[in-house]
Image 1 (cartoon, rainbow, N blue to C red):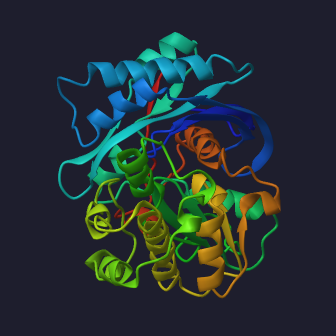
Image 2: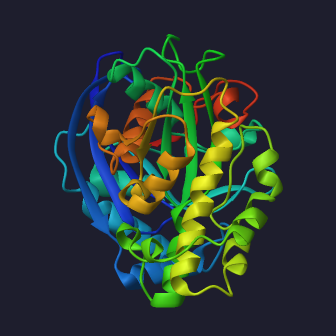
Length: 363
Protein backbone atom coordinates (compact mmCIF):
# COMPACT_ATOMS: atom_id res chain seq x y z
CA UNK A 1 0.00 0.00 0.00
CA UNK A 2 1.14 3.52 -0.76
CA UNK A 3 1.11 6.25 1.83
CA UNK A 4 -0.93 9.42 1.39
CA UNK A 5 1.83 11.56 -0.10
CA UNK A 6 1.64 12.35 -3.84
CA UNK A 7 3.73 10.13 -6.13
CA UNK A 8 4.72 10.22 -9.78
CA UNK A 9 2.70 7.57 -11.58
CA UNK A 10 3.01 6.55 -15.24
CA UNK A 11 -0.10 5.45 -17.12
CA UNK A 12 -0.51 3.73 -20.48
CA UNK A 13 -3.58 3.35 -22.66
CA UNK A 14 -4.10 1.53 -25.96
CA UNK A 15 -7.66 2.06 -27.15
CA UNK A 16 -10.00 0.16 -29.42
CA UNK A 17 -9.19 2.47 -32.33
CA UNK A 18 -5.89 0.50 -32.47
CA UNK A 19 -3.81 3.57 -33.34
CA UNK A 20 -1.07 3.18 -30.75
CA UNK A 21 -0.05 3.50 -27.10
CA UNK A 22 -0.42 6.74 -25.14
CA UNK A 23 1.77 7.13 -22.06
CA UNK A 24 1.73 9.97 -19.56
CA UNK A 25 2.99 10.83 -16.10
CA UNK A 26 0.93 12.38 -13.33
CA UNK A 27 1.78 13.44 -9.78
CA UNK A 28 -1.16 12.51 -7.59
CA UNK A 29 -2.22 11.03 -4.28
CA UNK A 30 -5.10 9.22 -6.02
CA UNK A 31 -7.52 11.96 -5.05
CA UNK A 32 -6.16 15.30 -6.28
CA UNK A 33 -4.02 16.21 -9.28
CA UNK A 34 -0.81 17.96 -8.23
CA UNK A 35 1.19 18.12 -11.43
CA UNK A 36 1.17 16.88 -15.02
CA UNK A 37 4.37 15.26 -16.27
CA UNK A 38 5.85 14.30 -19.63
CA UNK A 39 3.99 12.17 -22.14
CA UNK A 40 4.71 10.14 -25.27
CA UNK A 41 2.95 8.28 -28.04
CA UNK A 42 4.02 5.07 -29.72
CA UNK A 43 2.25 4.48 -33.04
CA UNK A 44 1.36 0.93 -34.01
CA UNK A 45 2.81 0.06 -37.41
CA UNK A 46 0.39 -1.16 -40.12
CA UNK A 47 1.63 -4.72 -39.56
CA UNK A 48 1.08 -4.44 -35.80
CA UNK A 49 -2.40 -3.01 -36.38
CA UNK A 50 -3.21 -5.95 -38.63
CA UNK A 51 -2.12 -8.43 -35.94
CA UNK A 52 -4.25 -6.67 -33.30
CA UNK A 53 -7.23 -6.30 -35.63
CA UNK A 54 -7.14 -10.05 -36.31
CA UNK A 55 -7.27 -10.68 -32.55
CA UNK A 56 -10.33 -8.50 -31.87
CA UNK A 57 -13.19 -10.45 -30.33
CA UNK A 58 -10.89 -13.17 -28.99
CA UNK A 59 -10.96 -14.43 -25.42
CA UNK A 60 -7.94 -15.73 -23.44
CA UNK A 61 -6.50 -18.88 -24.95
CA UNK A 62 -4.08 -20.14 -27.57
CA UNK A 63 -3.52 -18.21 -30.77
CA UNK A 64 -2.92 -14.79 -29.22
CA UNK A 65 0.85 -15.05 -28.94
CA UNK A 66 1.58 -12.63 -31.78
CA UNK A 67 -0.92 -10.07 -30.49
CA UNK A 68 0.51 -10.32 -26.97
CA UNK A 69 4.00 -9.79 -28.36
CA UNK A 70 2.82 -6.59 -30.09
CA UNK A 71 1.15 -5.25 -26.94
CA UNK A 72 4.08 -6.06 -24.64
CA UNK A 73 6.82 -4.79 -26.95
CA UNK A 74 5.04 -1.53 -27.79
CA UNK A 75 4.29 -0.77 -24.13
CA UNK A 76 7.76 -1.71 -22.94
CA UNK A 77 9.33 0.48 -25.63
CA UNK A 78 7.36 3.62 -24.81
CA UNK A 79 7.33 3.22 -21.02
CA UNK A 80 11.11 2.74 -20.84
CA UNK A 81 11.46 6.31 -22.08
CA UNK A 82 10.32 7.81 -18.75
CA UNK A 83 12.32 8.59 -15.61
CA UNK A 84 11.21 9.07 -12.00
CA UNK A 85 8.02 6.98 -12.18
CA UNK A 86 7.25 5.16 -8.93
CA UNK A 87 4.27 3.16 -10.19
CA UNK A 88 2.80 2.15 -13.58
CA UNK A 89 -0.85 1.81 -14.57
CA UNK A 90 -1.14 -0.63 -17.51
CA UNK A 91 -4.53 -0.97 -19.18
CA UNK A 92 -3.57 -3.46 -21.88
CA UNK A 93 -5.43 -3.89 -25.17
CA UNK A 94 -9.15 -4.62 -25.03
CA UNK A 95 -9.99 -7.49 -27.38
CA UNK A 96 -13.47 -8.42 -26.14
CA UNK A 97 -16.02 -6.97 -23.74
CA UNK A 98 -19.15 -8.87 -22.68
CA UNK A 99 -19.69 -7.91 -19.03
CA UNK A 100 -22.89 -9.92 -18.57
CA UNK A 101 -21.56 -12.91 -20.45
CA UNK A 102 -17.95 -13.99 -20.70
CA UNK A 103 -16.58 -10.89 -18.94
CA UNK A 104 -13.94 -8.54 -20.29
CA UNK A 105 -10.57 -9.24 -21.88
CA UNK A 106 -7.66 -6.82 -21.89
CA UNK A 107 -4.63 -8.49 -23.47
CA UNK A 108 -1.40 -7.83 -21.59
CA UNK A 109 0.89 -9.30 -18.94
CA UNK A 110 1.47 -6.87 -16.08
CA UNK A 111 3.90 -9.21 -14.33
CA UNK A 112 6.16 -9.41 -17.39
CA UNK A 113 5.95 -5.63 -17.79
CA UNK A 114 6.91 -5.09 -14.12
CA UNK A 115 10.01 -7.24 -14.64
CA UNK A 116 10.88 -5.44 -17.89
CA UNK A 117 10.54 -1.97 -16.32
CA UNK A 118 11.76 -2.73 -12.81
CA UNK A 119 8.67 -0.98 -11.40
CA UNK A 120 5.43 -2.08 -9.73
CA UNK A 121 2.65 -2.34 -12.30
CA UNK A 122 -1.09 -2.11 -11.62
CA UNK A 123 -3.12 -3.89 -14.29
CA UNK A 124 -6.32 -5.88 -14.97
CA UNK A 125 -8.37 -2.89 -13.82
CA UNK A 126 -11.76 -4.11 -15.04
CA UNK A 127 -12.21 -7.71 -13.86
CA UNK A 128 -13.16 -6.99 -10.22
CA UNK A 129 -15.87 -4.58 -11.33
CA UNK A 130 -17.36 -7.14 -13.73
CA UNK A 131 -17.22 -9.89 -11.09
CA UNK A 132 -19.31 -7.67 -8.79
CA UNK A 133 -21.98 -7.11 -11.43
CA UNK A 134 -20.56 -3.98 -13.07
CA UNK A 135 -20.09 -3.16 -16.73
CA UNK A 136 -16.33 -2.85 -16.25
CA UNK A 137 -16.46 0.40 -18.22
CA UNK A 138 -16.00 3.28 -18.46
CA UNK A 139 -13.17 3.58 -15.91
CA UNK A 140 -11.98 7.15 -16.54
CA UNK A 141 -14.88 8.88 -14.65
CA UNK A 142 -13.10 9.01 -11.28
CA UNK A 143 -10.24 10.79 -13.03
CA UNK A 144 -12.68 13.09 -14.82
CA UNK A 145 -14.00 14.03 -11.38
CA UNK A 146 -10.45 14.95 -10.30
CA UNK A 147 -10.03 16.99 -13.50
CA UNK A 148 -13.27 18.88 -12.82
CA UNK A 149 -11.96 19.78 -9.37
CA UNK A 150 -8.56 20.73 -10.84
CA UNK A 151 -10.12 23.22 -13.30
CA UNK A 152 -12.20 24.74 -10.49
CA UNK A 153 -15.61 23.75 -11.86
CA UNK A 154 -18.53 24.60 -9.57
CA UNK A 155 -21.51 23.60 -11.74
CA UNK A 156 -22.36 20.23 -13.31
CA UNK A 157 -20.39 19.57 -16.49
CA UNK A 158 -19.61 16.60 -18.69
CA UNK A 159 -16.52 15.02 -20.21
CA UNK A 160 -16.91 13.18 -23.51
CA UNK A 161 -14.22 10.78 -24.68
CA UNK A 162 -14.44 10.06 -28.40
CA UNK A 163 -12.22 7.03 -28.87
CA UNK A 164 -13.17 3.82 -30.64
CA UNK A 165 -16.34 3.97 -28.52
CA UNK A 166 -17.77 7.18 -27.08
CA UNK A 167 -18.20 7.53 -23.34
CA UNK A 168 -19.72 10.32 -21.29
CA UNK A 169 -19.08 11.35 -17.67
CA UNK A 170 -21.54 13.75 -16.03
CA UNK A 171 -20.03 15.37 -12.92
CA UNK A 172 -21.38 17.41 -10.03
CA UNK A 173 -18.12 18.86 -8.61
CA UNK A 174 -19.83 20.07 -5.43
CA UNK A 175 -19.44 16.57 -3.97
CA UNK A 176 -16.30 15.74 -2.01
CA UNK A 177 -15.62 12.29 -3.48
CA UNK A 178 -16.48 10.60 -6.78
CA UNK A 179 -18.05 7.52 -5.22
CA UNK A 180 -20.68 9.54 -3.31
CA UNK A 181 -24.18 9.04 -4.68
CA UNK A 182 -25.01 11.94 -7.00
CA UNK A 183 -21.44 12.94 -7.85
CA UNK A 184 -21.15 11.05 -11.14
CA UNK A 185 -23.06 9.36 -13.93
CA UNK A 186 -21.07 7.61 -16.64
CA UNK A 187 -21.75 5.33 -19.60
CA UNK A 188 -20.82 4.52 -23.17
CA UNK A 189 -22.82 6.70 -25.55
CA UNK A 190 -22.32 4.50 -28.60
CA UNK A 191 -19.80 3.87 -31.35
CA UNK A 192 -17.44 6.72 -32.18
CA UNK A 193 -14.22 6.44 -34.20
CA UNK A 194 -13.91 2.64 -34.51
CA UNK A 195 -16.57 2.06 -37.19
CA UNK A 196 -15.43 5.13 -39.15
CA UNK A 197 -11.87 3.78 -39.03
CA UNK A 198 -13.14 0.40 -40.22
CA UNK A 199 -14.98 2.07 -43.09
CA UNK A 200 -11.84 3.92 -44.15
CA UNK A 201 -9.76 0.74 -43.99
CA UNK A 202 -12.34 -1.19 -46.00
CA UNK A 203 -13.03 1.46 -48.62
CA UNK A 204 -9.80 3.45 -48.87
CA UNK A 205 -7.05 1.39 -47.21
CA UNK A 206 -6.55 4.21 -44.67
CA UNK A 207 -6.54 4.02 -40.89
CA UNK A 208 -8.98 6.91 -40.31
CA UNK A 209 -10.84 9.85 -41.85
CA UNK A 210 -8.14 12.33 -40.88
CA UNK A 211 -9.58 15.72 -39.90
CA UNK A 212 -12.98 14.53 -41.14
CA UNK A 213 -11.82 15.36 -44.67
CA UNK A 214 -13.94 12.73 -46.42
CA UNK A 215 -17.02 13.29 -44.25
CA UNK A 216 -16.82 17.00 -45.01
CA UNK A 217 -17.44 16.29 -48.71
CA UNK A 218 -20.45 14.00 -48.15
CA UNK A 219 -24.10 14.30 -47.22
CA UNK A 220 -25.79 12.69 -44.21
CA UNK A 221 -28.40 10.16 -45.32
CA UNK A 222 -31.28 10.58 -42.87
CA UNK A 223 -32.83 7.16 -43.46
CA UNK A 224 -29.66 5.33 -42.39
CA UNK A 225 -29.27 7.66 -39.40
CA UNK A 226 -32.86 7.00 -38.28
CA UNK A 227 -32.39 3.23 -38.53
CA UNK A 228 -29.24 3.53 -36.44
CA UNK A 229 -31.08 5.48 -33.72
CA UNK A 230 -33.76 2.78 -33.58
CA UNK A 231 -31.21 0.50 -31.91
CA UNK A 232 -32.48 -0.45 -28.42
CA UNK A 233 -29.19 0.50 -26.76
CA UNK A 234 -30.14 4.16 -26.82
CA UNK A 235 -33.26 3.54 -24.73
CA UNK A 236 -31.37 1.52 -22.13
CA UNK A 237 -30.78 3.41 -18.90
CA UNK A 238 -27.16 3.94 -17.81
CA UNK A 239 -24.75 2.80 -16.58
CA UNK A 240 -24.14 0.76 -19.75
CA UNK A 241 -21.18 -0.19 -21.90
CA UNK A 242 -20.32 -1.48 -25.34
CA UNK A 243 -17.83 -3.70 -27.08
CA UNK A 244 -15.97 -2.12 -29.96
CA UNK A 245 -17.95 -4.08 -32.55
CA UNK A 246 -21.41 -4.08 -30.96
CA UNK A 247 -22.69 -1.76 -33.69
CA UNK A 248 -21.58 -3.76 -36.70
CA UNK A 249 -24.87 -2.74 -38.32
CA UNK A 250 -23.38 0.68 -39.05
CA UNK A 251 -21.35 -0.64 -41.96
CA UNK A 252 -24.42 -2.47 -43.27
CA UNK A 253 -26.51 0.70 -43.10
CA UNK A 254 -24.07 2.60 -45.33
CA UNK A 255 -23.16 -0.25 -47.65
CA UNK A 256 -25.00 1.26 -50.64
CA UNK A 257 -23.65 4.78 -50.08
CA UNK A 258 -20.61 6.27 -51.76
CA UNK A 259 -17.52 6.77 -49.63
CA UNK A 260 -18.13 10.43 -48.76
CA UNK A 261 -21.80 10.00 -47.85
CA UNK A 262 -20.96 6.88 -45.85
CA UNK A 263 -18.31 8.76 -43.85
CA UNK A 264 -20.61 11.75 -43.28
CA UNK A 265 -23.49 9.50 -42.17
CA UNK A 266 -21.35 7.43 -39.79
CA UNK A 267 -19.91 10.61 -38.28
CA UNK A 268 -23.47 11.86 -37.76
CA UNK A 269 -24.35 8.54 -36.12
CA UNK A 270 -21.56 8.96 -33.56
CA UNK A 271 -22.65 12.54 -32.83
CA UNK A 272 -26.33 11.58 -32.57
CA UNK A 273 -25.46 8.84 -30.08
CA UNK A 274 -23.89 11.50 -27.84
CA UNK A 275 -27.00 13.69 -28.15
CA UNK A 276 -29.15 10.77 -27.03
CA UNK A 277 -26.76 10.16 -24.17
CA UNK A 278 -27.00 13.73 -22.89
CA UNK A 279 -30.73 13.13 -22.38
CA UNK A 280 -29.85 10.68 -19.58
CA UNK A 281 -27.94 13.28 -17.52
CA UNK A 282 -29.52 14.19 -14.15
CA UNK A 283 -29.48 17.82 -15.26
CA UNK A 284 -28.06 19.49 -18.37
CA UNK A 285 -24.29 19.97 -18.09
CA UNK A 286 -23.03 23.53 -18.21
CA UNK A 287 -20.45 22.57 -20.84
CA UNK A 288 -19.20 19.51 -22.71
CA UNK A 289 -15.43 18.99 -22.69
CA UNK A 290 -14.23 16.59 -25.38
CA UNK A 291 -11.12 14.41 -25.33
CA UNK A 292 -9.90 11.52 -27.47
CA UNK A 293 -9.19 11.38 -31.18
CA UNK A 294 -12.70 12.42 -32.20
CA UNK A 295 -12.13 16.00 -31.05
CA UNK A 296 -9.69 16.37 -33.95
CA UNK A 297 -12.57 15.73 -36.38
CA UNK A 298 -14.05 19.18 -37.10
CA UNK A 299 -17.10 17.62 -38.78
CA UNK A 300 -17.99 15.63 -35.67
CA UNK A 301 -17.34 18.59 -33.38
CA UNK A 302 -19.53 20.85 -35.54
CA UNK A 303 -22.34 18.27 -35.49
CA UNK A 304 -22.16 18.10 -31.69
CA UNK A 305 -22.14 21.89 -31.36
CA UNK A 306 -25.14 22.19 -33.67
CA UNK A 307 -27.15 19.53 -31.88
CA UNK A 308 -26.47 20.39 -28.23
CA UNK A 309 -27.62 23.42 -26.25
CA UNK A 310 -24.30 23.99 -24.48
CA UNK A 311 -20.71 24.91 -25.32
CA UNK A 312 -18.85 21.97 -26.88
CA UNK A 313 -15.09 22.41 -26.47
CA UNK A 314 -11.93 20.34 -26.59
CA UNK A 315 -10.47 19.82 -23.12
CA UNK A 316 -7.53 21.99 -24.16
CA UNK A 317 -9.89 24.94 -23.55
CA UNK A 318 -9.45 24.29 -19.81
CA UNK A 319 -5.73 23.43 -19.91
CA UNK A 320 -5.98 19.63 -20.21
CA UNK A 321 -4.39 17.34 -22.80
CA UNK A 322 -7.12 15.54 -24.71
CA UNK A 323 -4.72 13.06 -26.31
CA UNK A 324 -3.32 11.92 -22.97
CA UNK A 325 -6.31 12.12 -20.64
CA UNK A 326 -6.96 8.36 -20.64
CA UNK A 327 -3.29 7.50 -20.11
CA UNK A 328 -3.27 9.96 -17.20
CA UNK A 329 -6.45 8.32 -15.94
CA UNK A 330 -4.71 4.95 -15.58
CA UNK A 331 -1.80 6.57 -13.77
CA UNK A 332 -4.35 8.09 -11.39
CA UNK A 333 -6.28 4.82 -10.99
CA UNK A 334 -3.05 2.93 -10.33
CA UNK A 335 -2.39 5.15 -7.33
CA UNK A 336 -5.95 4.65 -6.12
CA UNK A 337 -5.55 0.87 -6.35
CA UNK A 338 -2.24 1.03 -4.49
CA UNK A 339 -3.90 3.13 -1.76
CA UNK A 340 -6.92 0.83 -1.48
CA UNK A 341 -9.36 3.44 -2.85
CA UNK A 342 -12.32 2.61 -5.12
CA UNK A 343 -11.97 2.99 -8.87
CA UNK A 344 -15.63 2.55 -9.85
CA UNK A 345 -19.05 2.75 -8.23
CA UNK A 346 -22.73 2.03 -9.00
CA UNK A 347 -23.25 5.26 -10.94
CA UNK A 348 -20.25 4.75 -13.23
CA UNK A 349 -20.39 1.04 -14.09
CA UNK A 350 -23.47 -0.32 -12.31
CA UNK A 351 -21.29 -2.33 -9.93
CA UNK A 352 -23.14 -3.31 -6.74
CA UNK A 353 -20.89 -1.19 -4.48
CA UNK A 354 -17.83 1.02 -4.84
CA UNK A 355 -14.92 -1.25 -5.72
CA UNK A 356 -11.20 -0.90 -6.30
CA UNK A 357 -10.09 -2.97 -9.28
CA UNK A 358 -6.60 -3.88 -10.38
CA UNK A 359 -3.85 -6.35 -9.64
CA UNK A 360 -0.41 -5.20 -8.50
CA UNK A 361 2.68 -6.96 -9.88
CA UNK A 362 6.10 -6.13 -8.50
CA UNK A 363 9.45 -6.61 -10.26
